[in-house]
Length: 189
Image (cartoon, rainbow, N blue to C red; front, top):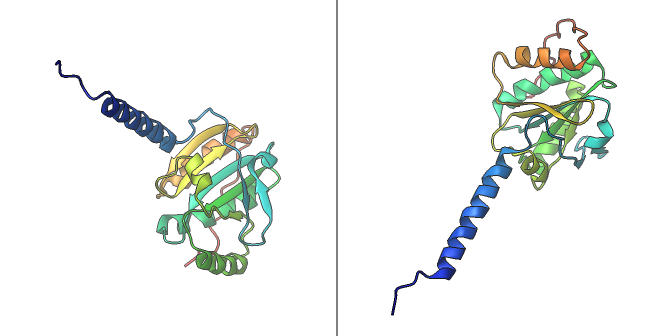
């Protein structure tokens, strides 16, 4: 009798390989130039509902962050300053909490109110928004133009992060240069 490979084992291996490739492709998130995946999230500051597609006509800075991420805590005050400077009728920051607990969000609610922040601080309790954007490390920032198209993706936050972001925002704001952004306001500790 001829030796035949176990067809079921080969099929299972092929299926696992295919699913692994699909998972890896999904983890990368949407590409620059593609439509930003829509989502609805709730603010853990005031319970209001925010839908990405409702921001049509505005530039959106979508950032994924967490309290346990020191670079994230440096990034948020800068983004708050940018939104305040440009005006939330033209640019809005949606800060999605990444894997923070309810207890941490209660702490954040108090700290954000004390700091007077106006950026939308959104809960993602099951990480579904982060998954749709392929977030695997934070901070992870997605810049979305007025039509809902992803125009830039930034991972990490360092010395030159704001300097890199400003020219992109200026271009999106119809080539009207912004005045220098004031130093970031109070930071969360």
